[in-house]
Image (cartoon, rainbow, N blue to C red):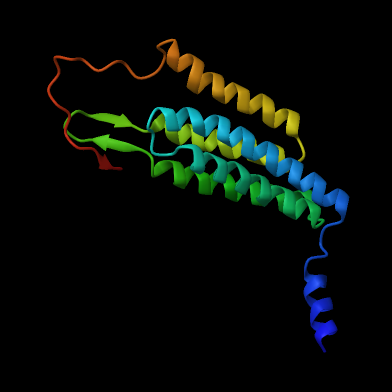
Length: 170
């Protein structure tokens, strides 16, 4: 009886051959590292979605694409998974957006767009397009980090402006 239970449990973990496990690990690692690159920049700036959020979005997106692919899903099925991811990540990003009623100002758009781009990086890595994921991730990092340092983005706060009122969620 004990050996039957062991064989049943072992059978539940036999869905990956060694080459498949290596491919999945590689895809998830690339997604996680690129998510960390994007998230680290947001973390340094004290944004709502930082390092851990970006890693989880990238690795989760990669897993949602890679696992059905390895299970033999048809491209149509994987396409539907990606469509669901894009919509779902849009809702996650919407949670980062805040609107100040008094100042008619919206913040968090860059963070939301960064989370969305991080999901695209994860999808590319999960689909086995690691070089594409790296290229997209580097474009995202350049946009968030380098362009931010060059002064592109939100205007600097006016030191003579009145104190900001608390933000409300949209």
